[in-house]
Image (cartoon, rainbow, N blue to C red; front, side, top):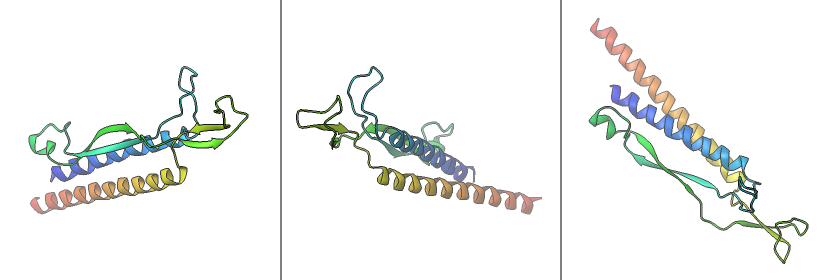
Length: 138
């Protein structure tokens, strides 16, 4: 029974990380310079999940659930934007902007929130079933 709670918990942690990454993408949708002030458009980040929970204390727990395998940069092309007055414009007046589509990020955020909610409901159901089982034993 505790395995079901571990699975739901690992799912909530993974979705929380995904939502934080999506938030960072939206926040940096117009970022053209890096921390040093050099022209380097922000690259969209993508969270990759993998099966299992390596942080689980039990052997069985490590085979259940999900974990974040990595946060990678999206290597798709930057989006050209015509801004001839920008100091970062090329000879044709185009500035390469981050490869972030706010609509796609919003859809991903909604999907992530729904998956998080589903894990919360599953955890609450597991807790309820454990409480019922304890009542039957008493």
